[in-house]
Length: 274
Ligand SMILES: C[S@@+](CC[C@H](N)C(=O)[O-])C[C@H]1O[C@@H](n2cnc3c(N)ncnc32)[C@H](O)[C@@H]1O
Image (cartoon, rainbow, N blue to C red; front, top):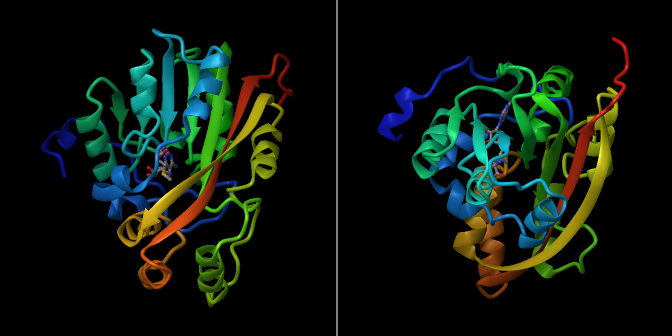
C-alpha cells in the first residue's frame, strides 16, 4: 500500500447494500487493486468525445468522481483540465489513485457518506460504479451538491456485448456462468442501460438529457483475460482459471466484443415534494 494513504481522510467501511443490483462484496476490488489499472481497458475515446461535445469537459469545472477506483475516469477528467474530487472507499485503491493522480482531491469514503456544500460541483460522474451505491441515500445528496445547471454522467463498460456475434470463447464463458450453483442474482442487471435509467430517474430528482452506446473489440491473451476476469466481482478464482484455460485451448488469443453505455442526467427543475 502506498505510504501516503495515511494522509487521506478516513470514513466508515461500506455496509449498505446497493439499490441497483444486490451484492457481491463492494470491497472486492481491493484484492485486485495492484493490477486493476492494467487489467481494465480504458473507456472508449468516442465516449469521452461525447462528453466533450455535450460541453461537460470544460477546463476549470469542478468534477466529482464516484467510486473512482484507480482513476480510469479521474485521469482523463484531470487531463481535460477539470478540478477533480474522487470518492473511493477502498483504502488500497484510494492510495493508488492518490499516487497516480496527485492533483485529484481523493476522499476515502463511500459515496453515501460524502459531505459537501450545496452546488459544490458542475459535473458528477460514476464510471462502472453506480450499481454499488444506495441510490435512496445518494441521489438526494447529489441533487443538493450538484450545481442546478450541472450534469450527472453515469457510464459503464459491459464486458460481453449481448448484441455482438457469438464467439467460441463467449460460448465457454456462458458454460462457466451457467454451471454456477448459486441462484442468479436478484434485481435488474447492472449492465442494463434501461434498468439503470429507471433506477436513476425513479425519484424524480433527475431527468435524462442524453444516452448513447459504443461498441468495441479487443484481442486478449490468457494473461490479460486472467487479469481482467479477476477484477469481476461475481467471478470466483476457479472460474477465472477455467476462462484462462479456455483461451489457451482456443489458440492463446481471443477476440472479445465489449460495449459501453453513457447516460447523462440533469437535476429536475421541479423535484417532487417529499
Ligand atoms: C468496477 S470499479 C470502477 C472503478 C473506476 N470508476 C473505473 O471506471 O474503473 C467500482 C468501484 O466502486 C467502488 N465502490 C464500491 N462501493 C462504493 C460506494 N458505496 N461508494 C463509492 N464507491 C464504491 C469500488 O471500491 C470500486 O473502486
